[in-house]
Length: 248
Image 1 (cartoon, rainbow, N blue to C red):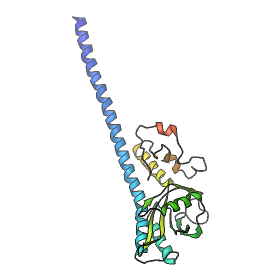
Image 2 (cartoon, helix red, strand yellow):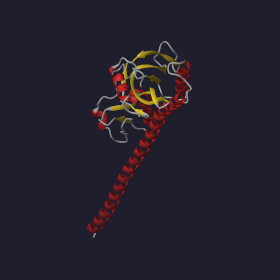
Image 3 (tube, rainbow, N blue to C red):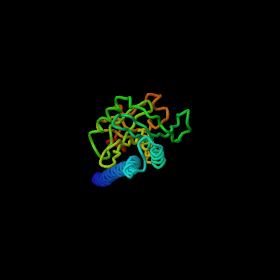
Image 4 (cartoon, rainbow, N blue to C red):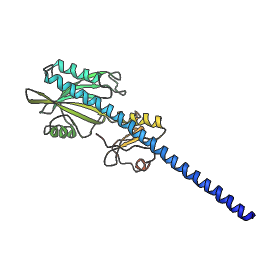
């Protein structure tokens, strides 16, 4: 009888324990899934807001040009670009490039700019695009119409996403207005979300290379050899409660 009662107690307690462990495991995975969904939704909203400001900036400048509010390379154009920059936090530069690949525009001074205080909007000199990457992007832009996101462009100031729209008047495209967004801005989004959700958020492109990571938000990231668009196996294996998105 003692053995029988002991067996019954063992089976009862074991069954309850198994059910409790199973329920706890399911609850844990449900909570992790819910947190991951919230993280991805928050990241999507932040990215749409960040990139949406750049799209609105080029659309606004294109509309002003179509209405005859400014001429290319005139003082009114400089004022229009500066105004678009001031109204679009997160956009680092606004350029107007003509079919002969001559660009002019305005940019926001960064924290490492020794000549201008951070956040100052300064006029850029008119010059012919020299970078092969930039020239390739502009040549490709001639073949398509409407507002478009272009390929990432790297220069001495960093790595940038860009969106452009044609400046058209009387049915003819005279130039393109381009808004540049440094990828470091996206890393700041992942840094904020990592802190909010208590995890390590990052953004990958379609090929598995890192576009944004909280470490890239460090002002000295480039000096320390931490670069975006570098395949990182370690980052790709940290899948718990992280986000993987395709770039614009």
